[in-house]
Length: 328
Image (cartoon, rainbow, N blue to C red; front, side):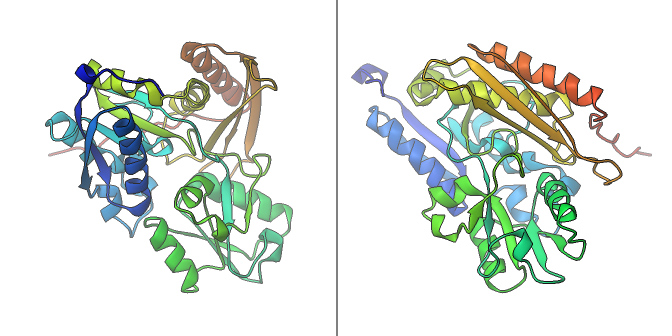
């Protein structure tokens, strides 16, 4: 990490959700910035996404509910940056905000967590599997159908990571599916019974990566964050997020997008796979892939836009938000 001269030392406040995982992520960024000579404090906040636990995110406004209050803190000057799980960040940020840094990615895969069942094929009759993601619902149902397991129920699972694990331990579910990255970051890797390979459960755009949001009018903060960025991850998630953006950018639509780099330290070949599911289950999952030489974020986004075209050619339809209710 680059060294900063004393004159560039900043006093920075990080806005963060107060869940254990969010605080770990904020503390991680805080430690890196302090190593570079900055003075850093945390501003813990509770978001709408943390408060609404009785309904699916797709029914109440999407994953943007996890970032709105943090953006207000940035706008009001109470914080200088916000650390997000990138898969929770909307595809389009409000005017005046920008994604200033994408950090090196953790394991992007989904994890199977169960005290008794080694995998899908080991579930007892009438088992209940919990997940908060429409993407996971569609891909799990596809895998279960291939096993002839129409008896298995997939039920909503909300709450922070500790709450979800508690619900599993209380016996409300036979198994749950979580992002492997969060479990590993909190030292809970032993809870992972197995991980789904992307061929079975293609990850969400940006899963496993941390993004840092700032106000666009803060170039000094962007400069301070520059040493924390990982260019390869940034290009990877730019391609993935371009797919989500092109398909409507909503968690109301089951959509996966995941990239892998070609072999070799200097390889510029980026492969992008995407999967789209019909929210109503009337159509089989659509899967497409493409690859290109990628050396810039713009190249990555162009690859993502190309994959959007392939999805639509294969029968996928973009999500169109419903108009707001008429007022009288």
